[in-house]
Length: 498
Image (cartoon, rainbow, N blue to C red; front, side, top):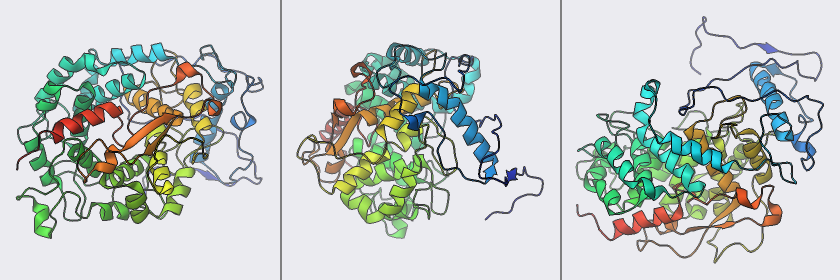
């Protein structure tokens, strides 16, 4: 444990004399998150009376505090209590800012038109204050296009604008930077490649210098099997997932360039030692950290599991390299009651973005536990590893902003980051993702990654209306299936000669 400076802030811990928690203080946990053009705080309306009855159709689980409470009261418990109290009126469907109509399950409708308008707006000009987001330009394009695709909009209409925006961000030495004149980074390159996949077309695909990309990624491969996120940058599972996403979509050679330093350690390919590196990132809790020996985090869990699922069939890669019982325990503990939403770490608050980062882990783990590909869409439901109903209620009840866009939780601003990943999580609750014996790829190397399909869950299991259903996205690449297939097939038809 690192030393703690004596002058540091000390958390207040109280041990009450009874098992009842002390009265919650109203506190806000601030996060550094990108916000969209709307800088004014969304009105959350006048708070409903705590005694007001919930709408018909809302189960008791989502209307009252959990029956078991920890007698130890800390600042974290205070924040959790405050968050729960903010969420309860929204879960009950009685907050004055919520829009009609509500369905028979007491769930508000998806404000589709408002969210579409919000995302279209996020692709326009930004005020001067957004200069701080200059290193996230490819992400801002990706978040908007992915969100619009989930809502059924056609991303290809932005083809020319996206190409013109991303072209200056590609460096001659390979990869994309976060903005003009910035060094190449795995995260920015990942977002740029996915954005180009969504708009599709010859001009978009040929924009990417695949030869330079391959050589640049070779410089990021490390002797322990992992990847740095940029030259001279940190090594973590983000780099591994982003790198393997790019390599598999662009059909880059798996062999490392001859000048890659990792070859000096005996590594010959991009996947050499990678699965073992990811295995070392699983912590004593069962979750997965960014690098060995650090704290488990929901986003890193998705990156690691998706990376393993790109490397091979989940029933082989995940089962072999992860402690499944511990992983199940940690992931299950990320969903809270009564909120129904997901948290990213132990003792942290629910946050809408983990609807994807944690929620997206479940189909990958489910596929690993199924043990074999499906011959077709599942005919009957075999249950779920998480509460689809709870997450749906949290998203539609607590995450929709009155002015369009989706947010972390009540009281927070909407932004395109949360809008994208909250919608992705909602889509995951509405569909079964499964692997088949058929792959669009003719290569055996990544055939498993391109064999995924999706089918809607049964209508009787829904707590949302038919018009609230979103389009599915590929569970590994988080863009539409067709976009994944088109980029892979185009790349396979043009083998890279190295």
